Amino acid sequence: MITSQGIAARLARLDGIGTGQRGVTRLAWTEEDAACRAWFEDQAVRTGLRVARDPAGNLWACPEAEPPWWGVGSHLDSVRGGGRYDGPLGVACAFEIAASSPHPIAVISFADEEGARFNTPTFGSKALAGKLDVTAILSRRDDNGVSVADAMRGAGIDPGGVVDAAAWRSRLSGLFEIHIDQSTDVARAGTAVGIVSSLAARVRLEVELRGRADHSGTTPPEERRDALATAARLIVTAEDLARGVTVTTSRLLIEPNAPTTIPALVKMWIDVRALDGGEIERWLAEFARLARERAERSGVELTIGIASHSDATPFSEDLRSRLSLAGEALLAGPAPQVVCFAGHDAGVLADKLPTSMVLVRNPTGVSHSPQETVSLEDAAVAARVVAIAIDDIEVIG
Image (cartoon, rainbow, N blue to C red; front, side, top):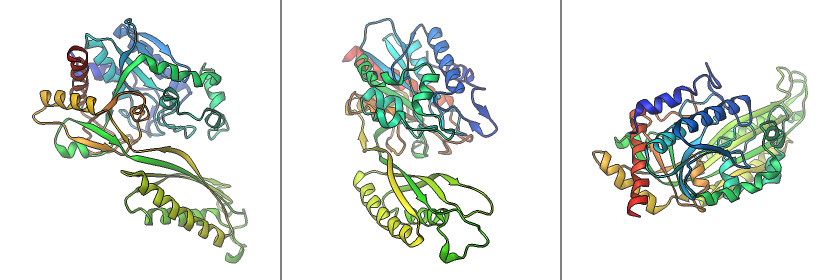
């Protein structure tokens, strides 16, 4: 029987891993990540599943039956200063489903879903889907100069074998992901859960501006090449152009970052999302044109790169239909179908396998924050909906 108490007990064993006053920080290939792996292994043993780790570092809790299996899961890593439920809620629910279902179910925790350390979002699922640009990704470095390849080696994973992860995809018949709603869409519908019809298109830009360090007091305006002042203008430009797209400048790195020195280097990351990828393309073309003009006037060198890109992604109509029927059986009315503007592992795999997502009501809509909250009673409903859908597939076909 899937219960909120069971989910709570599983999540409680994660408390203390990477937690502090500023929230939860569990970055890929770190000590906190290793502690989450130990939690996963413990949960698998308690559920009667055997543990495996694929060449990309994805964690699998596998049934004894021969594959392919239906997979259920999410991720255990976090952003810096994140919340308690983004990712782990889905993994804990997956273990509850596997423990109660008469059918063989694999629980999966995808590696480095957030990409917070190296700007490598959905690393593990992209490797499983065969979509990872391995050469480019492995050379990326964190703020301390550590490369992805070296970090993986430190975690006991051979980076040279990442390309072999795609072969593990044949072990799955399909995938369900349960996740906290990162908006108020489900809450406004007045139901415990929502079914994701599709993921919005998204692009993450990496913008670099190179000016010249100089004295902040003695350098006259006409001689300045201020990278940060130019970056500030580009941030406003990015938002001013945001018609039909959602734009967020989410991170800045500044050098030399000294009180009396004109900034010489700024790196910034801009997140752009829309229902239609064409809207992002139109925004990007206009932003790039205006950014080049602004940089030229300021005497600052400009580079705009695509750090990551995902097309709008529909989920399996068959799985959505089964989830809808399961939802109607448990709820007072049908579960709403919503478009999700966040990126998720299930979306990465959607063109390779039948996949679907269930969102758990989030009353405030807050996520990626210590204030993130959810009712575990609602989470239990989400887990039951997925369990019923899997039973429908296995029994009825």
